Image (cartoon, rainbow over all chains, first blue to last red; front, side, top):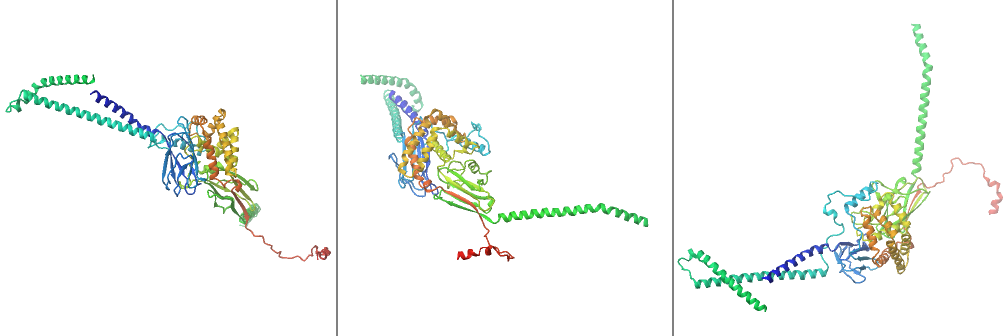
Length: 260
Length: 349
């Protein structure tokens, strides 16, 4: 019984911990889009220089009419050929500077990604409504105030970063760890349920044995059986309880003997 | 009756001298008015005749890249010749103006609805790059920044020249600000709206000119851009990385730079957040990224720099009247000085 209880507690604890993982995964990094420039633009990437945090994800979106593959000079990442209009992403798990280029035109189409520790503050993206307000003030020929105060009821969409979305994918290690943990929790739950089932079956079996024993000791007349069954059962209850107590006492003694 | 008639005639006779001066004045005034109106009409006609005989021509040279273009909007009216400059590159261009006679300057064609042209045709003409301001004039298909201009000419033989220079100091200064914004982690383009604020450009240039590290950075960046040999770019790029490290690390310059970047972004990002980013980034290793970025820019923009000649736009007024020799109607019979120099003819022969 104690084993089953502890098994449940551990399962629930692990389930609780695991339930935090999806939130952690979505909040772990930002997504930034780097555009592979299309027709009518200078061949290359926009932005050509990007500074991001560890575990941020860069999505390369190919706006060009032809496929391009992106490869880091330090071979830290390499994409397949990204077809026109398609995208490919990479997440950075360590700090460093990564120069990258297209395999098709490495001299003219190259860019730079600087990955810094999460403790380093980076410039925040202006809140769209604040920026729009500032622009409206400037276009009116006035000077924007030092602090632009928005109306008191901002919608959640306004406070989101324009260029980023929550990361739908965590780094591979977190994936593996999370998967193992989930498997463990599921196994523990299955084991717990199975143990409960076995215990229930055992009890039912014991009761049936008792019933049979009592039947042998004090058989009930068949003709009166339906009418007096309740009365008989009520009479047998203290007897059954006494037997159970005896059995559990014996089984505890057996357990103690086993432990010794 | 006779008396009455006489009286009447006498009254008429008496009134005649009083009416005549009015009539004379009226006639005189009428003639004066006719003269004035006629004179004005003749002057106007003369002026109209003076406008008509010349037209504006526009020529461009060294526009090698299809991303920096000139468009002729309407040059049929010399007093209001309209044209546009478009920039699809990531670099700012300084515009050097020269005119004959001096004083002919291009202005924004539609200043009320075009803050970019109105701002950057002021005291220091500049052609902004793509994706600096949130005004997408091409519906997202192409990213150009456009200056819509007009110039007024008043006679034939006048000209206005605009030379687009990507290494003009003001242009390079603004290129470096874009680099710094990206290096500090600004992932979104179109945020430099503060440059459109009245007087902001002058303030930004004044502050940055006082920064010794920024001045050195500008010099090295210009040299990197103009280095003809791609292999020789790296030393300048390395020097730029050193300059940026010094700029971000100097406590006295950190605050000034934060203030500039705050104004450049239209105060839409808190100044404290910018200062924190500067202080934090100064502690990191970013030199390789800066070197790589500058090297990449030079590689991508090869062929745009002065060794191949700056793009030049030339507008000039050309007379449409073909000079003709009209013989005088009454040739004079008076002998010329030929007779005075008869020996000259013989000498000449």
